[in-house]
Image (cartoon, rainbow, N blue to C red; front, side, top):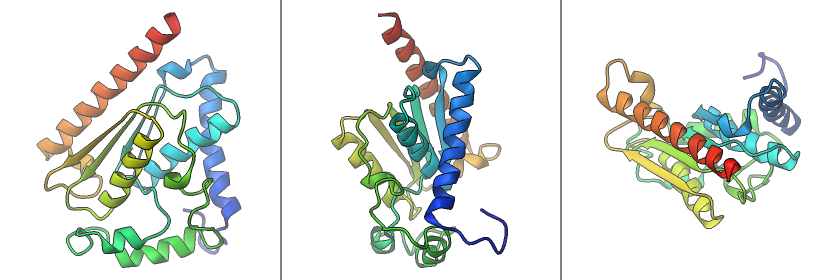
Length: 203
């Protein structure tokens, strides 16, 4: 988040996305192959995990090998989240309070702006994606919608809904076998997509 007192605008959000793209650009410039890169993030970071490859592709950069998004925020319109069956169940995120976050981070944005809202973007050409979410979190609505939109765009997507788990449960891997198992799934996915990208290049 920006420093207290900073007015957040669409330009601010796009600058943050640009910072992610520049980090990717620097990796490539330092000799790392795009086929060895998996872009990953959780929660708001999951938002950037989708937006940064979209902007990178727009700028003519090669696509990374894959995307991993953990409990990703993907839809600016809160209607689906507030109406979701998990809205009263989520012990961590109060769905209606997310309005404050939207007002703060996207004050002058159109809710369906494709360059700000991943689910409304043209997702064609994105790399294989793994999405993980907890079964009782309200952001599950975003995870499911994003998986549907990726599938409609022809992007290979694996959606894992982990039973009984909360928002970004992977951070509890030290004390939660589900968190550890989820991280093992992420590692297996990363190895698989980077190997597949290397094979395609060799062919």
